[in-house]
Length: 275
Image (cartoon, rainbow, N blue to C red; front, top):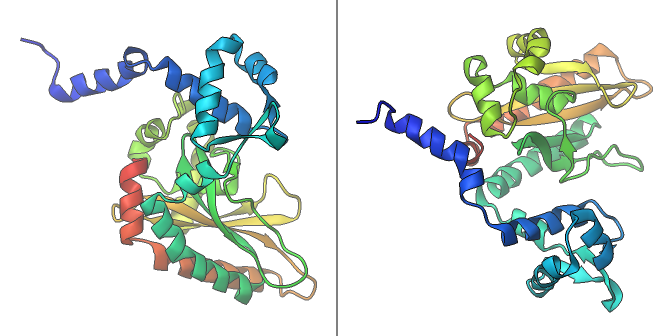
């Protein structure tokens, strides 16, 4: 009789599945999509071959199938390939995320109009945070976070807030599920910052990416009390603002939005996927 419990066997199976259940053709197709996603003007077949380090014959049929399925297109009918919008459309069919964005967008738009500040919604995905919605104030200028943009979990306001509003006792486990291994060293250096955010219920700090911007980040909780998303306002002080008073009003309004979004069915469904 084995001394390994069923749960331990499941963990071992999960850990070894990456090497046991290999699908080389699928890997090649995904590699092509990821390479093209980094290119503004597309790549020729020769350039794709060079990037992947494979022979032309190994990717020819895969590239043609991606074109046939509508994920990749030939630019001007030639030998340069680029992504179509199909991946974006497929991603936006994802029901839990779609429901969360549908619930959040009107509230975010109201926030932006009332406070004169932009905001963006971030969810964890494959070891990063991904911007899934954004709202900007009316007027002739705006600060815009790009939908689909990725933010680092350990250096950005949204990323640190996502970390802060997880259960501390299982944070390492949660990060493992998000695709981050060996995160303990980084978490040790961030301990005081994360604890301060948990104590305050929000994260307020100067932006690590933009001078003169203060990141205001508030969590959207799932029914289990962990952050399934974070709403961040990149707060910019305008001439004539009342300083701290206006920033506190903005922060209070931001918390109203996240409280309205917390514990919803969309948050619960999304939590099942990212945990």
